[in-house]
Image (tube, rainbow, N blue to C red):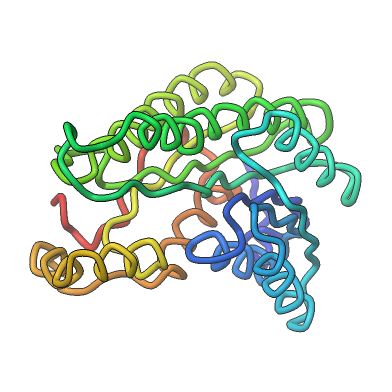
Length: 258
């Protein structure tokens, strides 16, 4: 068996990224483009998407964007179809978009809030994978998908019970998809970030001051990750260099759950 290794990790790949307007998703879109992919960025916020897309283009990358609502199956399918329309196929997808919940015990979480977390963080991933697998199968034939989970999916979550539950379900969907579509050459993995300096985390820390410091104290590396560090793990899993990796949940947590 011989392997041809490009200088670029994702050379000639067509990538679809949800939640690409900020945080880990934006970092991933920039990284994927630097690593040679043509990228379609998707999220609900047009101005953020436009800013990241223009930044990628200014750096010499190939990118476009589309507004997409994870709660709307038609919107998701249209976004994935747009990647194929723009670039001719779909090779890889990073399902990163998510919503937070107000931190607090389970009994204090309003039912509409629980339903919203379910719709975006679990159903949205399921809908995205359905559309992406259809597009990969019809165009590139083989490919890879990475879903963003959380270390919160691997432990109890007294303050984020709905968020943790949906992320644990994403782990299960990931494993099921890996087993189902592996025979077709479609790999499906997840990353489980630990403390990561995103807007979501800063908002939580503003609500409950000291949250970041508490997490860092539980982390052997003693600090939070930059979004770019988490994006690197997703890029590797999506690349051909991870060609024998599927069905895994890769912790990117600084050793928090070691």
